[in-house]
Length: 53
Image 1: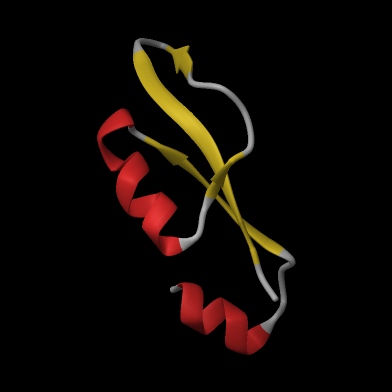
Image 2: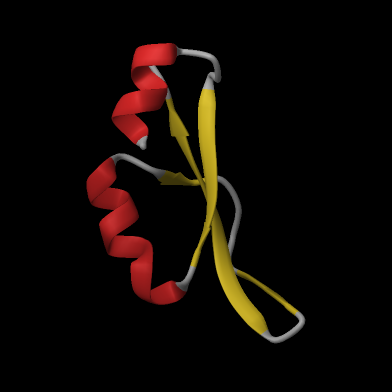
């Protein structure tokens, strides 16, 4: 998905809401935290962004 978005360059960034257990994989893919961990309706997540080049 990331590679496809890089090719098309129709967005400047991708955003995801990562579960606490997936933070490591998103970091390895190049995502960075865009805010602190949050809990909404009992679901914990960290907003993350990947800036396309």
